[in-house]
Amino acid sequence: MKVVGICGSPRKGGNTEIALREAMKVFEERGIETETILLCEKDIRYCVHCNTCLTDPCPIQDDIPEILDKMIFSDGIVIASPVYHSDVTAQLKALFDRTLPLRRQGRKLKNKVGGAIAVAQARNGGQEITCSQIHKWMLFQEMIVAVDLNTTHFGGTVQGDRIRLDAAKDDEIGLETCRNLALRMIELMELIGVR
Image (cartoon, rainbow, N blue to C red; front, side, top):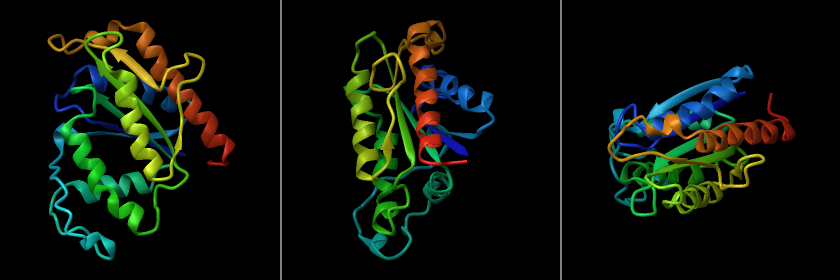
C-alpha cells in the first residue's frame, strides 16, 4: 500500500504542510509507504489546452510528469491546500488541470482513494468549500472520495494563521480531522482490497 500526499501551498514548512504531515504520520504508523510532494519545490506550468494529451505525452517540460507517475503508482492520494479566496491555490489548480492525460489515457486514477485537507485563517474560513473543490477533481478522475472518520467534516479542516507559519500545530481539533481522514482512507483501501 502506498499513499502520496501533495501539499499545494506556495510556502514551505507552513500550516498546510503541518496538517498534511499529521495525516501522513497515521499511514506511516500503520506500515504504509508514504511520499510527500511539496508543490512549492516544483516547476509547475499551466495547461494551454493544446490537446496533445488526447494521445501523446504533454509537451510542456516541467515537473508534472514526475508527479503524475507518483500518483499513478499510489493507492491513495491526500491533497492539501490553504484556502485562497474560498478555493485551492493556483499551483494546485495548475496541477489539477495538468492531470487531464491521466483521465484521457486510460482513467489511471480510477478507484484510488482520495482525501482532502484545507487550512484557513479562521475556524470556518472556507475549508469545506476548498475540500469540495478537491473532491470535485477527485470525482472527475473517478476516485473514491474519503471524508474524515468520526469528526463529520469534509476531510481535514485546520485553522492556521497567515502570519504564523506553524499555528496549525496548536489546532488539536483540526489536526484530529486530518488523522481521522487518514484512518478513513485506510479503511476504504482495505475494503477495496488494497494490500
